[in-house]
Image (cartoon, rainbow, N blue to C red; front, top):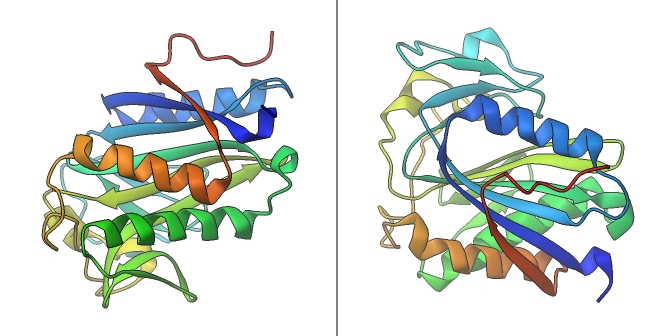
Amino acid sequence: MSIEKSVVIRELGRQDYVPIWKAMQAFTDERNQQVLDEIWLVEHDPVFTQGQAGKEEHLLFPGDIPVVQVDRGGQVTYHGPGQQVAYFMIDLRRKNMGPRDLVSGIENAIVDMLAIYGIEAAPRADAPGVYTGEQKICSLGLRIRKGKSFHGLALNVNMDLEPFSRINPCGYQGMEMTQVSTKGGPESLERIQSDLIDQLCEKLGYTKRLEKVGLEDLQTAE
């Protein structure tokens, strides 16, 4: 099995945002050519994250939720309990995959996964992410550094959507957010994770996957 077709799926549970962000940066900076790609599944404590192009006016009234300035693309978004986040640590050069290929693969995986639950959804050319009607159900923000990706997607599953009203989500005034449970899909992250990983592996070209828990055994450069 070729290394570019193998991926580690890491289930991290519920975590604070900043330590996972720092771990993503370290993994990306330190990995070598023998390190397998990884997809991290995580649920975050409440936090607003402001992308590199983020504008202050899109933070309307964050209140008691912390705001973290981060190194992904895009504007401001919210992470919180009941939202499935997936981070993509992928060596794009090794996979012969461009950034647009990665974005399209992720978006198509979400669309096909939602179709399993009878939810009709689609990406939009003018704004990354996945939408059902005019409502956004999945946000997407990536960073590519030296041909390697990190950051990823945030799929609203069964969460309190109120904090989205405190921002212009992804920089769009009046953007209405929705979630899987509201549209008749599963309510638990555990229920959707296997379907999500199946679709991501298919769309991103992974035929072998290794399941791991936690960050203790992260493989980077020696």
